[in-house]
Image (cartoon, rainbow, N blue to C red; front, side):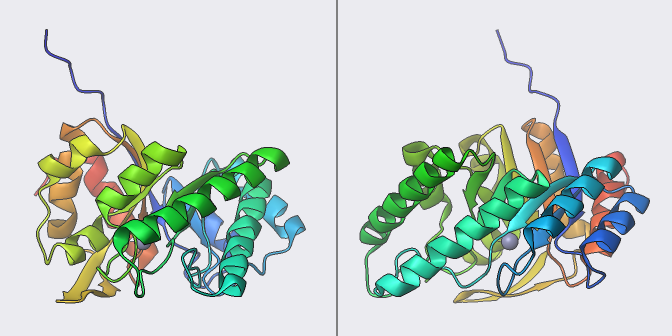
Length: 266
Ligand SMILES: [Zn+2]
């Protein structure tokens, strides 16, 4: 008997509020009939707990799914204990605000190899993730740590490393397909990647510029970038929240959402 693939569910939204502020950003996302939004703590978790509750209530009212991106300055494999401790605190603060706003997925770039091997870095990061999860369990926060596939080979976070981390610790994963594209120098065999990924996961997408060293910058998303991904998600029956990280995340999310509704159109 052949398994019928599950029906895919592809929910689309922007990364951040496009400078409008969280509440106005949510209103705009709802007006544009998007499904989700990622709250970006790019340079630090400065959102007060009360604001997190207000943002969560507004998203709930508008029927939008929230996720959180922890600050960029995170290295769970640093040589300096103080930097590991600061990284842990940034992740935990992000988790706390995520819990208050009813956001489940907390995205972060886990760390850098520096002079260590992939294995050594992996072990350090796994230990920190297990410890963070322990803390999350004790506090009762309803969140999932979702380390992200990163765009540079010098950064911890290949697909293989993150899938292993997921297996070992039960954490989630953020699959940034643009990063994957940059890491692979412009090729993705979606039919090879999809079967490795869970049925349901959090994801990022946009256009991307890259060099031999991987990701250079996120750029506008063209329909031709998204189509192969969209078709593969449908073919493999995946359930994803897909956040657009282009310089115009609302506009590009709207374009992607239109394609999800009409996947056959040119
Ligand atoms: Zn990303």
